[in-house]
Image 1 (cartoon, helix red, strand yellow):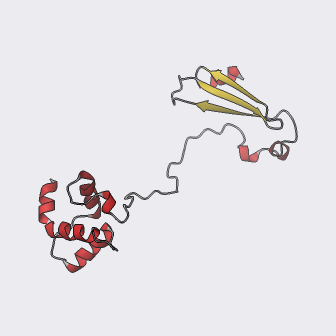
Image 2 (cartoon, one colour):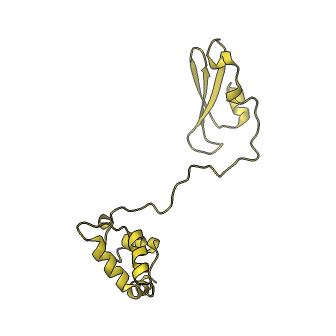
Image 3 (cartoon, rainbow, N blue to C red):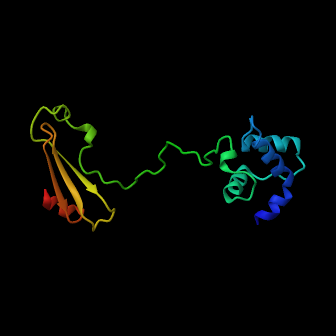
Length: 154
């Protein structure tokens, strides 16, 4: 599958290797590909992704060290696309707690959290209870993290 492409695009690969091995190179694989398409519109040209894959597979006389910068082909996004539609509303949100709880003015306001190791409901977990004012903490090992088990431990 890859052999015919290296044969069909021999001019591209020969010029790319020469360009990227120059001592003062200014081209990346992407910029060279655009340049090659401009000066040789009639010649077959592989995609930039294919070139990177060939370099990784050792099919070209280039290595990653010869690349001016190896680009991350998939750009990470910061937006979260997964929205939980069936999320249970288990009381007031932590952001809507009263001011005296936020400021840790009175004793007796506890926060609970569940620390899971293996993400299976049948595996043990740690239940932490933290008092807001004194920051006194109680840690309990629970055999599983089913709701009834956690309520019984509290």
